[in-house]
Amino acid sequence: MAKKILARFPAGAPRGAWPAEEFAAHRRSEGTPATVVMDLAADAFLVVVPKADAAARAGMA
Figure 1: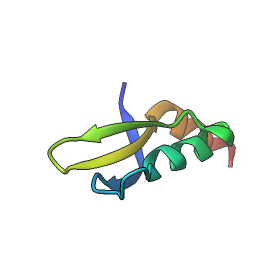
Figure 2: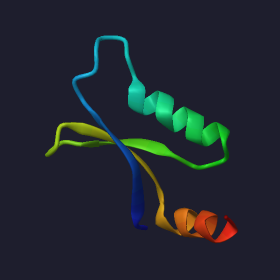
Figure 3: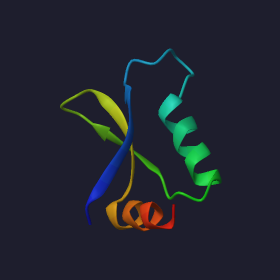
């Protein structure tokens, strides 16, 4: 299944900071099934949603 990237966060956040996880948690509290994945090549965390869900939400707006 294809994914849509909602946000990118550098992997070098200060110790104890989890900005990608916090962003994903806020999206999940709004009903969006966001997850965090690591892009090793870019050294970044990505917050993603299934592409089908993103399209369905766009149609509801």
